[in-house]
Image (cartoon, rainbow, N blue to C red; front, side):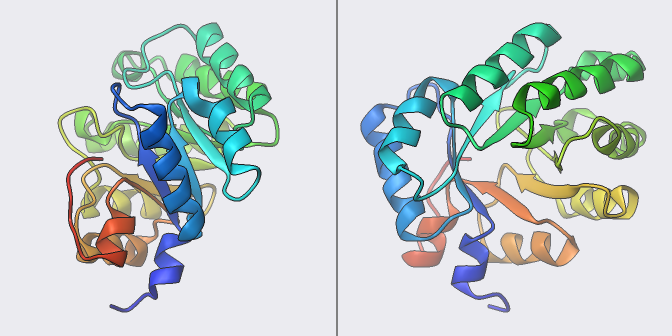
Length: 224
């Protein structure tokens, strides 16, 4: 393994986004993230306040907004993001309006992201573009729109569509973002080789439910 366990786990958003997730499961996620010094826990907004109170600053709380479809109106996304930050979220991962991108409504996509960024202020905003549904041309376009809108990260996937992060997409991001924002690989990360490949290609954050078990017990498990 070319990267240390501690280095990798410091890049991991330890994630549980299943709709059936219970508080005891979220609590266990928080404990694992704190014990392994993960970058954050990534959860749905209904648990943000409870998790932030429980963690008491041990690990940042990240949450998803407009998830997983991205097709809600901008005001609703911004309100959800603002409420999450008020409840203790330090990071927000939003989903773009994929239909607008397909329609070439680039100004609307940019404004959608910018409104959420305005709502979260100085908190970290990551933008999920759902690469499995996009052409390379659309992905490249988003490599411009995401930093133009003021977001901090471009992110591959929700983990709830037809595919997750690929080496091709992380390499494409790195080539076209050119340091204007950071890169998050998420969805389907199931091996140490996947993790190291994404880090080698330029990913600065990894969204996964598996990395902690993979690196501490060797179990692959199932999930995001």
